Amino acid sequence: MSNKHTYPPKRRIYLDTLDDKHIDRFITLSNDPELVINMGWPSFRAGEKKRFMETVEVMSVPSLNKGLAITFSIFVSDEEKPIGYVCLKGMDGRHSMAELGIAIMEKEYRSLGYGSEALELAINYGFNELGLGLIALTPYPFNERAINAYEKVGFVKKEVLEKAWRQESGELVDLLLMEITREQWVSGKC
Image (cartoon, rainbow, N blue to C red; front, side, top):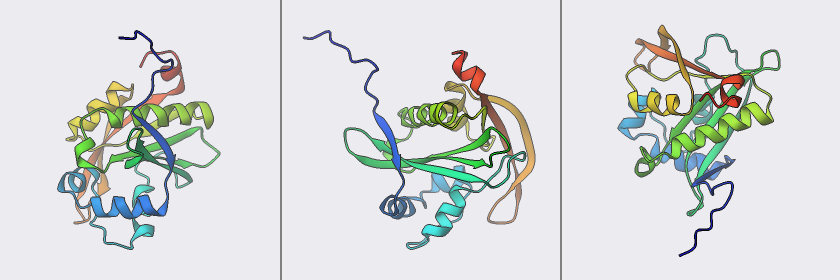
């Protein structure tokens, strides 16, 4: 048996351009009850690509305005299969910050670390390629699995944003603001 190791280690996932085929696939997966609860999005029907992307790119961090959004599909390396997306959004050139959104759309790939790997790739891209200084995200306070994944890669809980998100029903609910800075990421503190 060989003791050879590759450096850097081969990742199980990679990010690539989100295209229409991926959006169609994600729309068919979007009505999973777990996603509906944890993402807070409305039901989607076939052909609603524009509405799906508008939902993916909607902003929830109060200090950011609508700006440039870059959305990638998350692929499983060995299968060449898109399993979800990650989006950096709200970049307007005036601030060196962005909001991050992520969803593992394929149910069988959740809770296996693929989301954490995608977060690491997106954070690296944001800080090293886009020159961001801060990345924020806003999960629901009850979404413990997501919060644990975000903390695992270095996001820090900042505050509860009370009644900050309007559900499809019209109800206003709380969000948890979490952030990571370039300094935290680079220093390895995370």
